[in-house]
Amino acid sequence: GKGLRVGIVQARFNENITGALLKACTDELQSMGVHIDDIVHVTVPGALEVPLALQTLAQQEEPPFHALVALGCIIRGETYHFELVANESGSAITQLALTHRLPIANAILTTENHAQAVARQTEKGRDAARVAVEMALRMRQLA
Image (cartoon, rainbow, N blue to C red; front, top):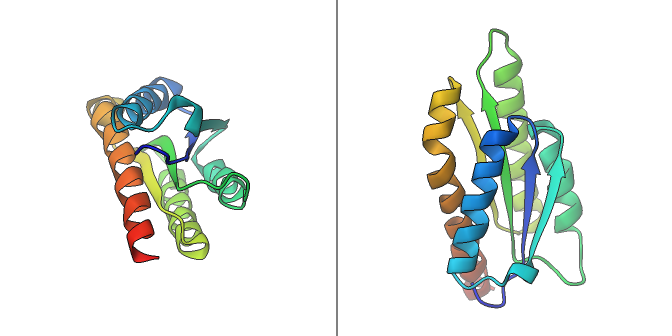
């Protein structure tokens, strides 16, 4: 990860979970050699706002990002809102990655309850960091 610049967009909704995702992600990025000054962290209200912030970072040219990370937590409630937020945010993130040819690690958790989110927060944060670094390096090889 040395020399890579990584942008992280964190949804504040369910902040206790997304804060743990952020810590695990940034710790793992640093353990992989990404310098703390090369990690840009942005917060937004919720998962539906994550794609717009990702798009803004993806369009930044100087200095460019090598990878982005989406962090959030959507916990199923009693209404259809869960499916709407999960599907729309996930679809938008995938489309952004394809449009900008930029790796975006999607670590927006979608769980049935708070306990499931807590059980996944650390490992998913680490996974997002690993995916971001691996795909940034892979894109360099493919270019």
